[in-house]
Image 1 (cartoon, rainbow, N blue to C red):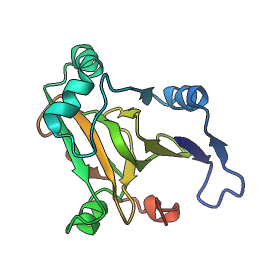
Image 2 (cartoon, rainbow, N blue to C red):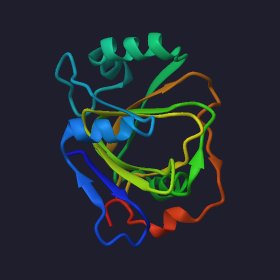
Image 3 (spheres, rainbow, N blue to C red):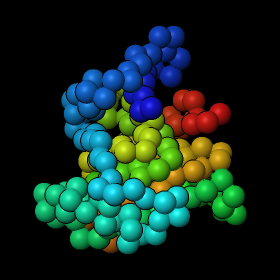
Image 4 (cartoon, rainbow, N blue to C red):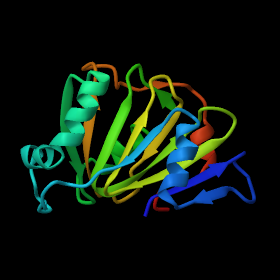
Length: 180
């Protein structure tokens, strides 16, 4: 189940926690982050390939592509037995920004986005059926956990716009890691 935890500071003794979709959506919308729920138009097997996944979510993908001018779409998957799982996890554990939207739809599995748009940190657990769209320039980081297990659709407006630009701020080390 999706969960949004808002910390006013790293040692916040009583962070705000929300599990209701509409409340999560409203809280994220207030900081410019889009949050949606999608359903597949047909059942998907666990080993569905990119073409099958994109066909099952075609209407939603096309809607966003037309709305934002996305130029490429792909599907990425990671499993707990991936030989480079820890290396891949480390790539996005530090606060960074992008010149492009970071748009992820979780076809399966889960991951944790940490959003730092102001003084607060918004920790959002995304699960199967969740779409998050982080605007360009928003400080954030992502944790797939020590045993990553997810399949996600990614949408891009430029081939290199999603590359991480690290802020150099060590804030990510002050918050709980996903799955630990």
